[in-house]
Length: 343
Image (cartoon, rainbow, N blue to C red; front, top):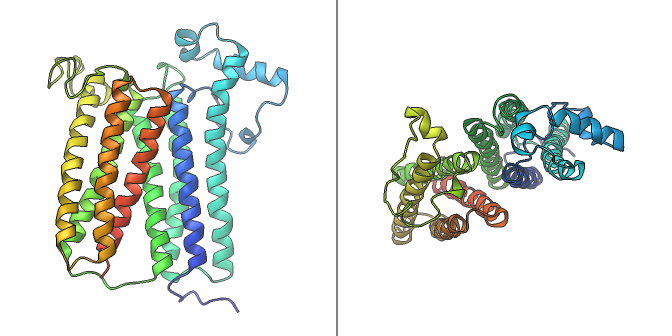
């Protein structure tokens, strides 16, 4: 017999949402590889349906390559590249777009089934529709980002890259939060309002730090100032804004790397302070205390990995590992914020 929509929890719904969150995580990782390999503008058209089919013949590959040869990245950076080299960057972008389609189907089809069988907890239905809408918006934002690298620039605009990543992370966080709600059902809010605010603030700080990292990636700023803790022997870079005024906050390599470093220091201090306070607070639920401790350890590991990545001039493997661990840190921070709200 189908469950009533008033039913307040569903393990099946929770597993579905966690699975979609894992797919979003995979998409973020492939998206990072797409950016790091310079593959993001290799497909110059947006075809939401027919674009799922890659070139299947030599003639089709040549046609795709000819489209790529008309954009600045080919003319100014990859002039004379072979068809085989083009295929290697094409597959990264195609895989990233395919994952986007898979995420959409993996969310939409089970959602329809859960709604039709009345297995979706009633209090979570509106969140599911919001998630579906944000997923559709993400596709539009992704193309808006790609367009920025097709006419004047040789790569996508860093601020659009940050927005695209930020929206993906919003989806990731909402999926995790809603999955936790579906698994546990409604709970009593904790009376420790200070901890609720502190945990939410810590999660917001992690989110903001990842966006600063997106600006570093978008400006290829991990390939300069490869000493630490200084920047070319200075605590503060001499060319912070790079003569670009306030626009340099988004486009100056010195500015975005310095800001990301400062954000890391602030986040590390905040995470360690939160963990120390949580361990001593016996009124905070035990799972929240453990999550605070794990979060501090992950932030430390992420900081060390960031320094190692920087000092090795941001190779692909270390850069991807740094991005993957950032997503785990965010997942832990969101889980801590969720758990700190419940008695």
